[in-house]
Amino acid sequence: MSTEATSVTLYRSGAVEELFLPFRDATSGRATYGAGRYLDVERPAGDGLVFVDLNRAYNPNCAYNPAWSCPIPPGENRLPVSIRAGERTTAGVHEADEDS
View (cartoon, rainbow, N blue to C red):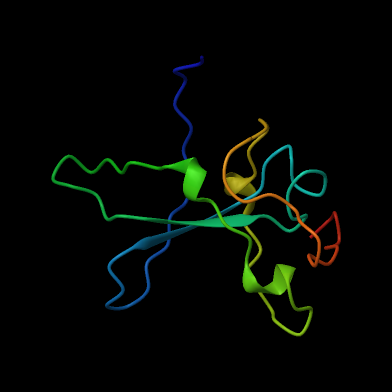
């Protein structure tokens, strides 16, 4: 297992306690939703570090209904590795443009 650190951009919105992490990885468009998945993480403690549990990654609402618009993960949140944790593609998930 690699211990190499990876930096991603987390977002916060107003009074919402959790931070928002949209990401794509090497499984996007294959085993997972093509436009990426999302993760909600707790705000950092005093040390500024956050714990990211990739088992809790989920498909955005737009994966299930093409009428929804969802944020596309920024370039720095496109991971070159396969994240084989969290929600996968299932029946009822529509296809997203691979270049999104």
